[in-house]
Amino acid sequence: MRVLLVNPFWGFLPGKKGPVYARPFPPVELITLAGLLRAQGHEVQLLDAAQQRLWPLQVAARARGFDRAFISSSNLDRWCCPEVDARPFVETARALARACPDTTLLGAHPTALPQAMLVQTGARSAILGEPELTAAALATAGDPRGIPGAAWLDADGALCQGAPRAPMDLDAQPSPAYDLLEPGVYQYELLGSDFMVFEYSRGCPYRCGFCHRSLYGDDFRPKSLDRLWSEISQARGMLGIRRAYFMDVEFTLQRDRVLALCDRLQAAGNPLQWCCQTRVDRVDRELLAAMHAAGCDLVHFGVEAGSQRVLDSVGKGITLGQAEQALGWCRELGMRTACFFLAGLPGQTRAELDETLRFAQRLNPTYASFHVAVPYPGTALHAGMAAPPSDAFPTHLADEFELAELEAWVQRAFLRFYLRPGAIVRRLGSRDLLHARRLLRIFLWYLG
Image (cartoon, rainbow, N blue to C red; front, side, top):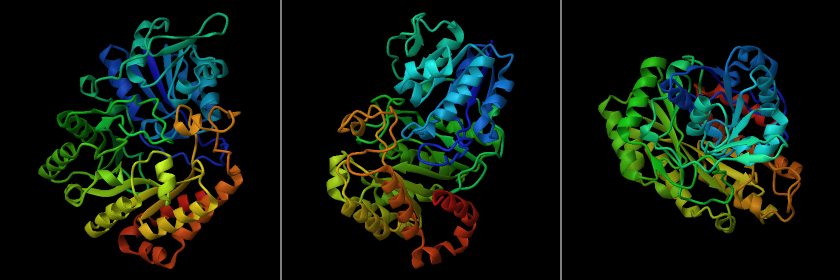
């Protein structure tokens, strides 16, 4: 069976919130699926239309001759925060389904809206939740009826669904098919090129009201260190990677596992420059020092707001003091930091928006990212909306602010954070010059 895996390009249409920044991260969930399909005896090819910037008809032209196709609406790096405008995915999937009738949808959008996505795309089936095991079952069986985790339409257009599928054992799967990725084409502007995404775990025990979790499930599932190290070694050997992002929702949730990875990296001569994302209350100075000694150059923190009341209202479970302490430790150790902040959280006032900007300036991370809070389906933010949204993936909470006002605040926050004299001077340092051109391009894109 010839199977095509498609990672669509999102940047050919402006989104509901303006142009889409189509960062070409490696499609980890698709190469993980490819490893499963190969183990079943299928011939598999990957079409990374995001990296190649292919429009829908170009994708369709390359899909002819395949027996089955799978297309993802949200890569692993966007499982928590999928795009709110599904039109690029829908248009690409529709063209793909015409060229390859046995097309299956996977990702956040078909999970949240299986009937609408199936009707709009003409795809044969959709996958609900974590995609890999269900996709492998569909590739072998063909008919989606009765397959756990699958959804399809009956002859009358009614939605049918298989039983829920249990989360997969991350250690029990075949290795990802790294050889399907083109060497040297992926990069992260805050780290550089020769770049790969890894996962040491899936899931998160925290219940922040804004985080989309439908593809992870509710349970935290770690990989063994030996399994992760095997993946790192394969990716280095096949692709020559030198930089990595550990894309766990909360990388430092289990402290001992992180320390064990740091020991392994140091014993191997620190072959990677890497970054991770985690919570400000799940780090300490000793842990950060071990990470830094093992090649960790950048830590991403979700701070979200500069008001304790707002943080408590969305169930974030951190304090402003913990954020200041974590950023202080990173600064002492010489580690770069990136902090995320949200505008338009439930009940957030204009004064609290200003508090958020002042707090971001006081924290003074290396990088700050400001975004409009999105009430994703299945989240507490979505369930708590005063009126039912007209769009299943609404752009913002409409209770207190119009979208235009929130977007104007985001733009103003970027300007006021990055154009401070101290911030400008810091970016003139020799290390930051390595990234200045990429950062300037992204900065100008955010400002429209």
